[in-house]
Amino acid sequence: MTNIIFLFGTIAGLIVIGGMIAVIVASGGNADMSSHSLLVGYLIMLVALSMIFFGVKRYRDQELGGVIKFLPAFLMGVGISVVAGVIYVLVWEVYLAATNFVFVDAFAKAMVDAARAKGGEALSAAIKESEDFKVQYADPLFRMPMTFIEIFPVGVFISLISAALLRNPKVLPASA
Image (tube, rainbow, N blue to C red; front, side, top):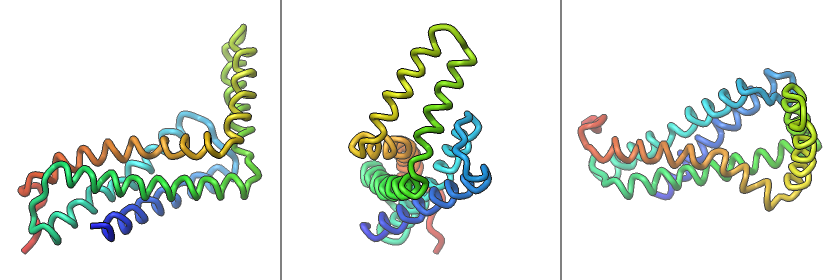
């Protein structure tokens, strides 16, 4: 089971990395803070974390004779999510270091620009919030868990769905 968790978690992590690199290349290396880029990012995560379903199914079919209970299937999915999340965090840390943390300034600027569009008191609050964000994000003990939390809940959600579906041996039964 551990081998399957690491294999499918690594595949999921590599898909997220590939998607992240593709988005960065497509944007010309600029940090895009639009809601469109967030949607694309979470879509990439959903595609990558579909490996949870395939990993649990493989374990169910090849190791357990086509039958798995909900809890073992869910825990296996969570394990795959953890591996993918750790890979995601490590690559994000490498990206930040390689780009001299340009993301932080781009994100803070996007916060201020969004508030500037609203005008009024929102601007001064956004400026303070963006400065606070820069200070917090400089701390790896803040940044790394925040990065992990971006992907892990998506993995838990997919783990729940996969476990609920695959506990039924009639869902995509193993081929003989």
